[in-house]
Amino acid sequence: MKILCVCGMGFGSSLMLKMTADKVIKKKGLKATVEATDIGTAGSTPVDLILTNNEFASQLKGGKSEVRAVVNVASEEEVEKAINDFLESQ
Amino acid sequence: MSEVQLTSDLIQWKDGAADWEEAIRVSAAPLLQQGNIAESYIDAMVENIRTLGPYILIAPNVALPHARPEMGVSEAGIALTVFNEDVAFPAGHDNKTQTARIFICLAAVDSDSHLSLLQGISQWIDNSELLNRLLEASSKDEVKDLINQYS
Image (cartoon, rainbow over all chains, first blue to last red; front, side):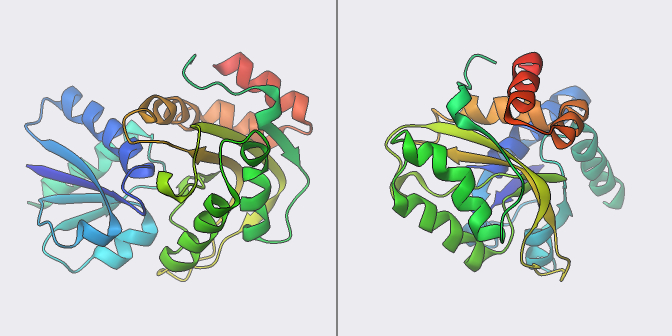
């Protein structure tokens, strides 16, 4: 599956979120690619799951990709919960 | 965490700020003083929030003010400021006002070189004990000691 981490600039919190997501994916043994990008281009790239903050989650919801909000971008626990939640919804 | 060079000059403890814009300017001041960034970078950080909403909140109570490198960064660096009082950000899409007290102002020169900085910041904000103790700190020295202790 394809995961996209989204923040305002595409190189701050989205990269931190990507680092956390990469750790979770490795831990869970999932086959997934994780990319980071900015809010301007996020909508145009269809992916399986978008991970982002509350602010951008509400802007991105309703598009082609599933969206989950994460409050603490460094929390493996929170990111794992978001990914589990997404997997269960499929 | 040797990648993050956080010298005493780059750590601040402040009572509060009049508004989020002042808080961003205060949090960036040490980097401006040391010549890491230009005024234009600070303006860009403020403008980004006006345009995109409070997207710099990366954890409860933690803000990561930053803008694109080409907006005026000459040397990568971070500055840490703990405000004693909540700094409120404009409500975003969800109409909820969010606040922060720990400001980590980030200046990056390119995407690769600042990965280690972000890794360092990740380690901090994933440490709830450190965050709680930073929120309880009441002086610059206390903040400095905590960072040394947990780095």
